[in-house]
Amino acid sequence: MPSISNQNHGSSIPWLIYFFGSIGLFIFAIISFIVISKVLGVVALIAGIFFLSKAGFISLPFRRN
Image (spheres, rainbow, N blue to C red):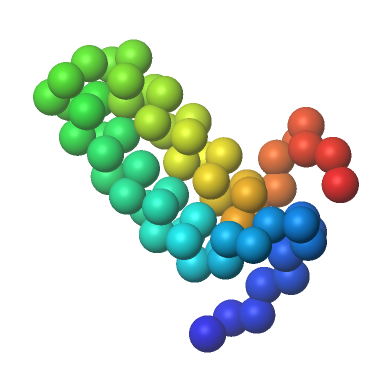
């Protein structure tokens, strides 16, 4: 299991929940983009990217430390 330094120390939610939540959001984004609507897919994709940045896997350029 990789050790990931979490920047936001006030968060009590572990990064694992963010990780699996973002994977679920990416899968939901692909399915909803194809089946339901393009707008919902894009929104879910943005939410998945936000979840990954909260977990510390990726750093967004506009994020403040």
